[in-house]
Every structure is written in C-alpha cells, then in structure tokens.
Image (tube, rainbow, N blue to C red; front, side, top):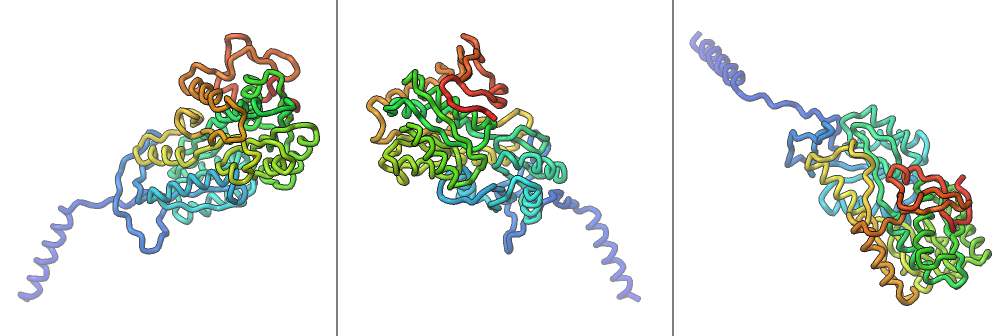
Length: 389
C-alpha cells in the first residue's frame, strides 16, 4: 500500500512538472534536410519581408536547375560558378542539368524540394511558367527565375545587366574591325538577346559610326554545331569580328580559325581558348549575385515585390574580362571612360535620338528607354543587320 502511494505521489509530481515546462513548437518548414549525419546547429524564427522563413546558413539547401550541361564555358557554366561560391560559404547545394524547357522542369523542382531544398534557382527563360506552377504548390519555398517576368510572393526574377558590359565589348570591336563588319551569333529573338545586340552595336558605333553588326539566330540555347556554322556564315560575308551570346565558344573558335577577331559572352576564360583572336568578353559574375541574394534570405530582407532584380556594373554582377593585347591602341582608355560613365550615370547608352534599323525614330532626342521598355525590347537599333522574329 505504501509503495502504491509513493508511486502515485511521484506520478502526480511528474505531471505537475510537465505542465509547468515550456512546450517546444515543432519545425513548420515544408522542407527537410536529407544529408546523413547532418544536424542543425543554428535556427531562428525570423521571417523575410515576404513572410517566408529567414533560413540560417545551416538550414539552407539551395537547388539549381540548368537547361544544358555545365561544361567549361558559357551561360550555364557561369551560373554554376555561382553555385560553387555558395558552397564555399558553407551552404549546401544540389543541381540538375539538361532539364528541358517543358514540364520536366516541374518534376526537377519537385525532386529538389523532396531532397530538402528550400531555395530554388531556375536559370533558363523557358523554365518560367513551370517554376511558377511549382511555386504555387510550395508557398514556403523560395523560387527564383533568371531572365523571366512572372513573380509571386515566393518567386522573384533576376538577371545581370549584361548589356552594359556588351556596350563596352562593342567599343573594343568597333575599334578593332578593319572591314566595319561585325557578326553576332545568338539564340532567340527575345528581349534578353535583342538588348545585347543593340548595346553592342551602340558601343561599336560610338567609336566607329559606320560599323554594322549582322545577327545570326541559332534557335537553341545549346547547339555547338549550329553556333559554329552561324559564325562561319558571318565570316564568309566579310565580318572580321565575331561576338556571341550562347552556351559555347564555338563562334569565337570559328573566328580564330579564320584569322578574325572575337569577343566573348557570358563567361570568363576566352583568352585561354582563342588567345590570338580574343579582344575582351562581357561576362556575368553570378557568384556575386547568388551571395547577395542568399544573404538577403538569411538577413530577412529578401523580397519578390521590388521588381526585377537587375544588377549591373555598379553592383559587380556583370563586368568586362580585361582588354587583351589584341585590341587596338586606345581601347582601354575608351572602355574605361565609358564604364565610369555608365556607373556614375553620366553615360546613358539608351538616350535618344535612337532610330531602329529601318530608320524610324524610336527614342526622341533627350529621352531614354526605361527599364520596363528595355525588358520588352523588340526592335534593333540602326546599324544592326537582321530582324527580330
């Protein structure tokens, strides 16, 4: 009897203590960490201005969706350099490559989330609508789409202002060309590509007013053979400088084989590939952008409501990869002056008067193009040989 009484008293005491103890709330995140043996060492309840959880470094797991192979050059390669920069910060990442611009993108995003990713970056324009669909399914996951225009509370859009660096590369091309004919190989007639061709042409004509830039479309983000064929056709037509915005340096290699000049696009390393042809290269520094964006998630300042995250020379998300020994005398000085003007605002490359390549005035004298107009740009400036669409 005494023993039973003692047991009852102990039981009542334990119940009383449990009732007074603080209750820990369960983790509310829809994601999980699947790294074996990994334990979270830090956590907080802070939220971003969009209402999403502000993850700590230990909680973050970032997934990347690539439309083509990573390779060693080009657009996907430079995004992957950004992913590797996050890993150097101690942030866990995953990636899937060769994901087509179809519903396969939705599956890829879900697969990454099932593996614990709470931040997703999709880097190809055609992934946009599929990423938007998955963003609706997972409101607590951060989604980010490069080059697109659909935003949601948990989905932002971003890109480097590569057109600024292309303007500078165009200066180098305009000063180097002997024929006054420059070729530009790129992918699809969308604003992203039209802006770059236009900026490059404006840069070239700022130092060589009669220079022309002829465009060849490849209709693919990644097609090495077609990219080289397009460059060869431009060279056959008298172009002595080749520029490109695509996923390989095949156009630049075609130029080198013919003794012509070349400027690179998107990624570093052009001088190593075509040392005797290389002038300079307009490149993205997505390592800088991804570190900025992830820091905003950790700080609680990330938002999708501030518009397109379009960052340029001033924020070091785009830049020019040097001026090689192959450039014409005075190129560095001309490029440096233009770069300084773009950064401090004294040079507006879109300021009118600007005509399209049919002679129609598109931007009146004293006016300029807004970011909204640039993001929808669908016409070529004077000096471009080619059509949009």
